[in-house]
Amino acid sequence: MASLSDWLEGARVRTLPAAVSPVLIGTGAAAGLGQASVPRALLAAGVALALQVGVNYANDYSDGVRGTDDVRTGPPRLTGGGKASPGAVKRAALLSLAVGAALGLVLVAVSGTWWLLALGAVAMVAAWGYTGGSHPYGYLGLGEVGVFLFFGLMATLGTTWTQALELSWPAWAGAAGVGLIACALLMVNNIRDIPTDSQVGKTTLAVRLGERRARLTYVAMIALPLVLAVACAPVAPWSLLTLVLLPWVVRLARPVLRGASGRDLIAVLRNTGLLELGYGILLGVGLAL
Image 1 (cartoon, rainbow, N blue to C red):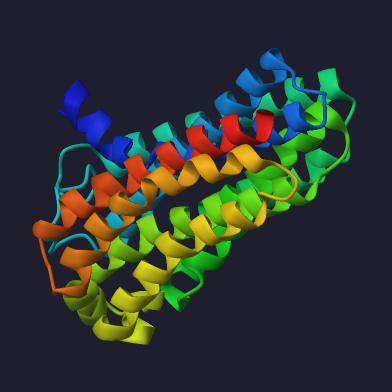
Image 2: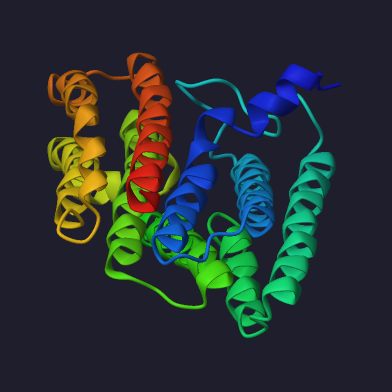
């Protein structure tokens, strides 16, 4: 039977900054428009966290029953590692998604943005379809597209819209920036798994690009967000706060460009999550000021 620590590992805590950071930036953009709302921001954070955990459990379940996780260089999964039954992991995924849906319903009700329910439904389908179903888009090299759209643009702009009922250029730039770092999280995870994914037919973007180009793409994904933050400076000068993250970006890029592999990339994965959290905090504060 899986322990609490096993379930926490299955929730992939390292990826949770990908859920919180867009909300921080979206709320900062709303504050810049003079319309920030702490209760709505907390609801948005709850939605994002629940969806992220749901995606992680759904990925664990789907990859496990397909046999994709039978051979791994990272921590063993709940399903593939035999720590929990496939049915239990599937129920955990559906429960997490249901919590996200319930919180999302409350958010659109208090903000009066009922049309966002349609986008929320699309997000739910995408959460399951990443590695689930007969044609998972994560196996076709489209995982980063989904991450950018849902954990970048939709999460950030949806947060801003439910508070301010309008969008600004900094909101769009921040959404793209945080989306790219979320994609970098997925990219470095998939770089680590290129050898095993290739064997089981999981054609991620990293597999399609090949190792060298995948590593260069990762570096671009963590560097371009700083450029986007600088582009916000004419409207929100305090967005330049994000430049303090430049040494962190360099620190992350070095091992990836030098060929770090296997378990050595687990630390890069964790620190990329911290980079995204730092980006969310600093850019969110910068846009608010």
